[in-house]
Amino acid sequence: MIRHGQLDSTFVVTDPRHNAVALNVTDALWSDLDERYGDFSGHTLISCFAFDDAWPTWEVHPAGDEFVCLLEGDVEMTFAMPDGDETLRLSEPGSFVIVPRGVWHTASPAKHTRMLFVTPGEGTENREQPVRGNG
Image (cartoon, rainbow, N blue to C red; front, side, top):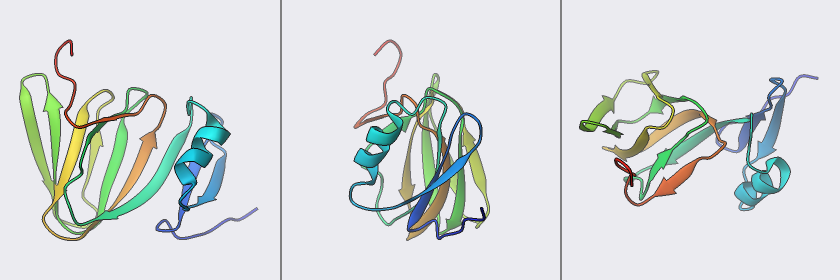
């Protein structure tokens, strides 16, 4: 069956066998994902987010690398690396970064920004500050 949609209103989840399911973005999306996929083991979320302000938290994905692609806007991404924070600016549509497994990251847009994310969701954490060292 051919399926289609808009990433601003429909996200896609792939399972360990690479089957894809389209899910409407609703207020209940995150609780629906938890209920349907549990710990998200072996699943990947393909999503699109638009934002104007800096992310209020840092996030990390221990189950695998995350692909992040700029669709529009201008954003500075910050990564908590062992030797200190590193930043990378994405300012051209189509530019992307592959965030390594286990690297805490956050983003701060310079203007309205839309980004595509391909995220291995199992074990994802969000915190106000990244975990550094043994913390």
